[in-house]
Image (tube, rainbow, N blue to C red):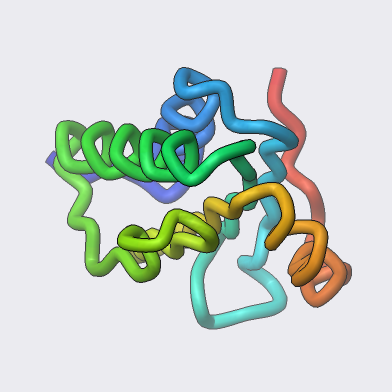
Length: 115
């Protein structure tokens, strides 16, 4: 079963929301980067919550048939990057998100609105 990048985006956002991720932002990179179609950025307020969000995203992606290409930073729970191909997810600890502010780096990208 093949999942589209838009379906994967919806799945990732829902998985993050299910684990009470804060300030979930999805950026549409299709016309500005070859890295991915979408970046999803969110944060948790503890290392444990960051790890729970990451685990749920991985689990839901794999259940949908998407291949998780890599997960970096899960051991520390401060900034985890989940590469699911067309969707790359950044799960931060709140303090790291404030410090790195990667939304600013991708300010040319459109924010995806969810109904």
